[in-house]
Length: 260
Image (cartoon, rainbow, N blue to C red; front, side, top):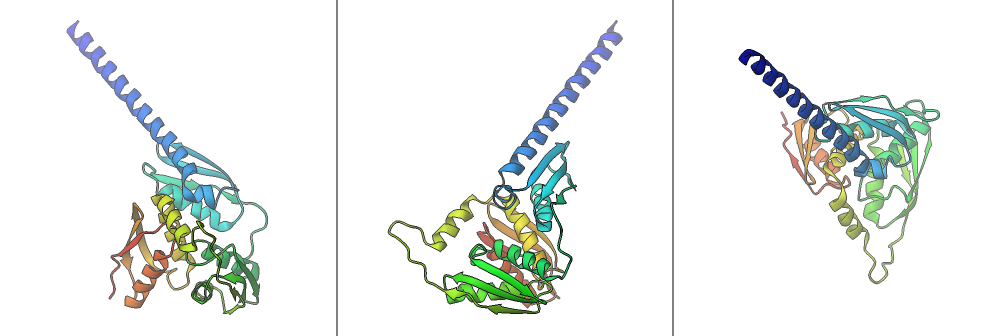
C-alpha cells in the first residue's frame, strides 16, 4: 500500500513538473513572438513585410514574404538576439524579382540599405542611382559634413567603383519649438531596443566593404554595444567603432577587438 502511494506521489509530482515546464515554455514562446513584433526593426524597417513568427520551445520559425533580401537577414538577426531564443529557422522569401549580385539594381539596394541604418545621414532624403558600378547621389544634405559622410558610406559598399555626389547642401530652418535633426536622433536613440541595435550593427558591419570580413561578436545592453573579435590592424578596429557608433540606437561602443 505504501509503495503504491509512493509511486502515485512520484507520478503526481512528475505530472505537475511537466505541466509547469510546458506552461513556462508556452509563456516564453508567447513572449518571444510578442517581443519580436514590438522591436524597432520590425516596427520600422519590416512594417510593410508579411512576416509570421512561430516559436516552439525557443526554436523560432520565420515564414512569409519580405520586400528585399536584406530584410530576411535583418529579421533573423533581430529575433535571434531576443532572450529565450535558441535558434531561428529563416524560411522568409523575397517578394518579386531579386536583383542579381553586382548589378546596378543590386548596388542601389545595398547603398540605400547602408544609408538607412546610419543616423548621421538621410536615407530618405537621398536619391541613389547607379551606372556600371558608379553611384550617383542626389537630394539634399543638412551640411557639407553630412554630404561627405554620405559619399564615404556609399563608397564603402561592396561592388561600388566610384561615387558622384550631386547632393545640394541646404541648412534646415528650425521652427520655434521644433526639434533639430540631432535632437530627433537622440530621442529615437532612447527608444531602440537592444535586439534591434544588435541586428542593425551586425548588418551594418556586413554591408560595409571595409568590415564585411570581420569575425565579430556583437552584444548590446541598454544601448551600449560591445564588439569582440579580431581586426587586421588598429585602423580596421577604429573604423568598426566609427561605423557602429553611427548606427541608430547606439549610445556607446566598447570595442574589445584584438589586433596583431
